[in-house]
Length: 415
Image 1 (tube, rainbow, N blue to C red):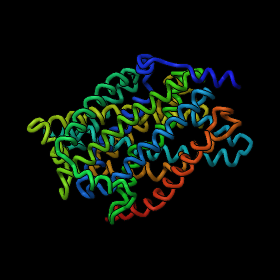
Image 2 (tube, one colour):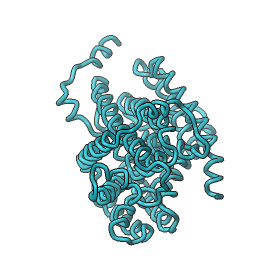
Image 3 (cartoon, rainbow, N blue to C red):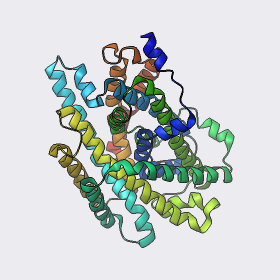
Image 4 (cartoon, helix red, strand yellow):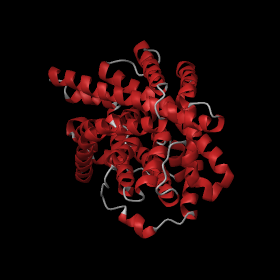
């Protein structure tokens, strides 16, 4: 045991750490889609800095949970779904209920997210061409269908890295240029939920802590790293990537709160207003291209995430050689295309998709924290007391918010 702990302290150079990055970038590319930009912009424009705390909480929670997930994959060399089933291996009833509930929740959330991703991707093109998003979305869906059939998502890591670097630079510089009220920002770090802001809070959390990302990260970390000593590389990858993604979300909300306070946001052109202090007339095309790129990368990953979950729960191979895995990708994509083609306001669908994820999130978080705390599963690499404390706190917070958000979503749909 001492030897293993000593190995885990192996020193890596910064160059080695940067070279090893990958799974964390995929996670950021998944949650940093049009849903994040839309939700943060609308929230900042409507409620100012008052729910900035929700973004900070989301980033911290995402780091904690994704680290747990990656560690689980590396040490057990199994996916999150397989580990969940292992916990209930001696109780067939609980095992069946778990498969049904977790699989159903992730599938429904994935379909909603898929629709939001396609519509978000379409917003950019629609903004530049005037063609309705519900016409563009199915076409983009067909392109993604081709990638799922013939392509490989590995190339996304480098593209997402460039995209994230560009977006963080532009949004952070813009946030500095518009000179936000620092005192008011500080007040926004105190947890409060203004009247009418609950759905936005849930959406902010749901767009950052995406349930199926926990499954994707566990599987990707398992494939990338095989030894306990490589945990330090996984942690670096997770912390660095998610902090950068969180900075972008904060910058979007703060900039919108400073420049667009009181505005109604209904289009990509509206969202581009926050970038005008830095980019001027180029703000609109940059936002359009950014939404397209962010949405496209996220839309490619979404059906794979659902497939990873179902494959682990149902004992499929986690690659295209298993037709069930492959056809699940296709089914999620086609259902997402149908949802995106309905003609509803794309920004509203995107917000509701994030909120739906926020509702399902507590269940997945509780499973993850329980499994990574189990000595039977992770042994000496199980959660520390501090990690358990954070995990339980995150579970309780997401459970309370998720329960309350059920009513908020119903009211929003009725209205």
